[in-house]
Image (cartoon, rainbow, N blue to C red):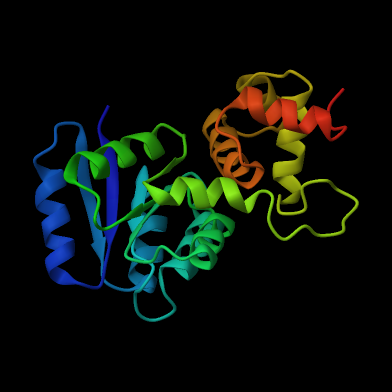
Length: 213
């Protein structure tokens, strides 16, 4: 199965370099490119790629805005941020925007390809030091709330509760009347917010917090 990719970066050299790289990889096809957030959003909605690779710094509103809009208007598209920004706040905002992967531009070609394949498969990937920052965000900035994981959306809470109750992905999808891929997307968003890397860890955290039957 070919992984269909959208590349969005305002630097033409970077964009063309990535196109050339991915064009040489069997099983990956670049179906669209973009130099602004508006182009990225439009191409994601029209082309429905498996993965949108976005830079954080793009005209006019930036890659994080593009990620939020793609998540809202084409939720089946996996989002991988490929950027120079490695500060905690940008990483947190990217996760909140729905990114399933965050990779720095210093990554080598194999890491970029592996990250795209991972996101396309519905899993999360965070390169180098970013992984430690993602895990750290789960215990940072506690907030008073009735729900133990206030960073989760309402739908993510439903998915987590069903996961903690022991339901597999297919059964959760049936219960919520959505596709398996949509549930995989939700899980990939839930894991970094909980600071975990697997379904089992997420279920255990939820059960300890009193979620799930």
